[in-house]
Image 1 (cartoon, rainbow, N blue to C red):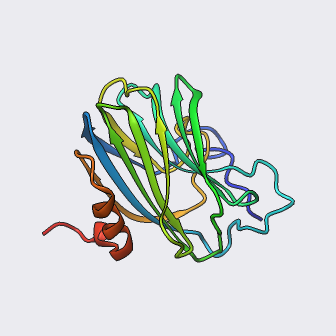
Image 2 (cartoon, rainbow, N blue to C red):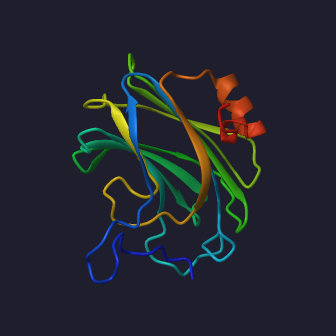
Length: 193
């Protein structure tokens, strides 16, 4: 129980990738991405003490080249949501949100904001109905526009252990109050008219 699927392809190695990916984005410069998901009832949680490979990749935001990406993952044992920036497959910057409680059936709400002028990435997140927590990274710039959100690690090696149910991508850096209001009301899940 609790181990994510170790491959993104069917066991025979052929066929389309099983990793859900939203493509066709063209976020050049500032952007904000908001995502809402649910920890499945039959998946990992805070009591997964005997499991190996505890970091669970939730989602990644990829540049057009695929060489640079932001990755958000969770560790149920240390109660962390982890924000990492990758450059050519290597972690260049990393920070954590501590004291995040994971319970099967609970919501996980994420907002990632990128400010191009300062290369500042801000993660605002809430799990299991908790208060919105904040982490920031001052990191490298993207090598071209952001074109995809992958629901798994940036490398595309595993599927996400969450059931994602919606999101929004915008080509501007939202204010903290705009993000928090949208996360609390779930307004970002409402389709545009």
